[in-house]
Image (cartoon, rainbow, N blue to C red; front, side, top):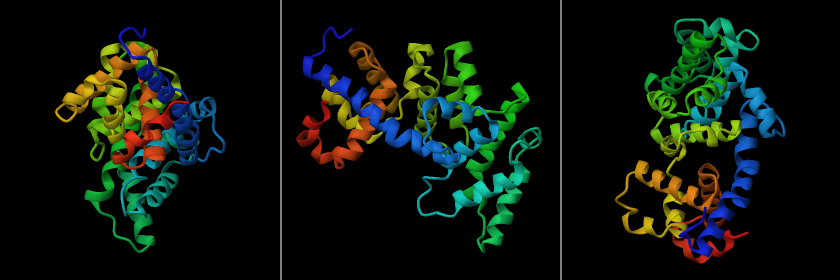
Length: 280
């Protein structure tokens, strides 16, 4: 599996996809996704079980991906979650999911905003709220449940593909291709589905962040020459190929790069000086 790779590149790849990926999951993914749905001390299995509930699945999409990273707009996440609670607190979620659109949810968002003395903006606030909610309603019309988490897992198991899910997510206003890949990456990990996905589809699971761009050439030197010219898709495809050659998970390698870079390197200029810290 490691034919053609230098020994130090293999060691670094395995460390990033092993120790540092574990840190990323335990210190980042699990607590953040767990807290978004009110789950204390989550494990992958308990998180997977909770996200099978359509309410919690939608709650996680809004809280962890939709509003938590919207810059200085610190009120929008609180308002979105309060609006969701007013609209469909479980177990009454099916009634809302059966509605033709998410207009009632947006109405509650506007009501909560006014109560707080704020003015809601269609341009700034409506995209993720209606986008994720109407996706849940679309899923409900297909399976009678409406859980994004279940829909994703069942789609992978039935087809081996994630391209359709990526396109559906990236079609939501305010969801960038990078964020769509991050969502698919996280849910692939939660459901242990990477090996079920066709090789040609796995690049969809690679959000190409700055640390992947910086650390990728450290384990695959052939990426260095064309790094600035490669599209995200081309770079992601090369990373997946390298991970297969090294015999590791490309999803875990991506997570490990992001965690090691943001927690130990911190600034791009320090990559070379701190790279020795990566091998554990």
